Length: 157
Image 1 (cartoon, rainbow, N blue to C red):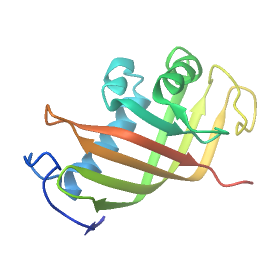
Image 2 (cartoon, one colour):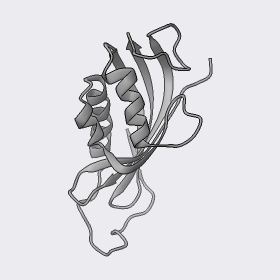
Image 3 (cartoon, rainbow, N blue to C red):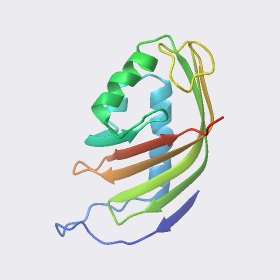
């Protein structure tokens, strides 16, 4: 993992929370995918800010996270899907004291998925090799890190 600091300082309001570290962000990324693969619906929702936006691997436009939750609930959480995720090349850039950008590669497999997506190779299964993921994390007033933007892109095969 590489960590770079772009700029630093306190929030515009003048108060500072504990500074985000690269290790904390990397742990948040790994925790996100563990929760996703475990289908822990409510825990997953708590990892996003209420106003988060998402560009999914098959999205044609930016969507509010609420719409993404509905789709993921139907395709992965409520189905018998078994998921496997492998992460690599996690790069964290600190953006001030209360925000960080994590960019990394991911391989994702879902077996017995509820609905076939545009990227699925065969009915009920999905395999995305070498996807590129970006998560923008912001520290909330309660001290937690939440995702405010997510972008997942899959290479065209």
